Length: 323
Image (cartoon, helix red, strand yellow):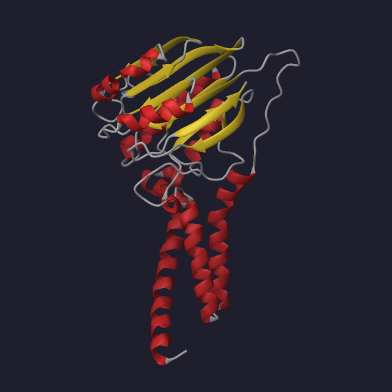
């Protein structure tokens, strides 16, 4: 290695060590995310931190700083382990009764982004995938007008237009009995959607929701209260149930896990490769999973995949389930 190359590597090494120090602080801060909104923000980037620490380990190996490399490998593992547990650990399905009929449906979940004007992209996705239920967030009056054609094939629907990014809509085929807008509490400012349908004689409840984005303490508390109340509502539902939406949270948050524990639902992402949905303007490796589909133990996830871009900052989720 010539002198210029040595100087360049030394500079790179110093930058890597400084970045690794910040990575350590971010990792440690994330461990206390349940206590404060700004600490929880650091819990969401496990995959990105693991990749950065892995790169740091290679640089320290090249510099022959074995202790630093070992420390970097430790923090890479600390961040990678929760991601691996999600991807590799599948939740067992509760077996149905031997004489129970089975049914299969497809659900499309999408945060359309209020300011997005590409309704044609969503309609194209619906035409191609032919879902039984479409659950949407951030619909305003323009969106609902642009999607009015859906009611020809999805005559059971409920929608509330809003300009503040908290509009909601749900569209169902004729096998649905009802669709409605509901609020979890008289003080709850965020609408949710619910439909009840039957397929092959089997009932299913589908709920869509969109809690606050936790960019300050008030909104963080509001999001957590929303998911706690939703968990209580879900506990009272009898029979197979699906809950979907933009939860503004990732699986590595303690409050995300509290929702799973409180509701008795399971994460449809368990046992599958990571499918990050936001933000679409960043490359896939930089995205995080904010959109989720949860299911009761008596529902089996046949397939789960990301849909194409529809002009939103979120990617759609497409889920095939059997129950």
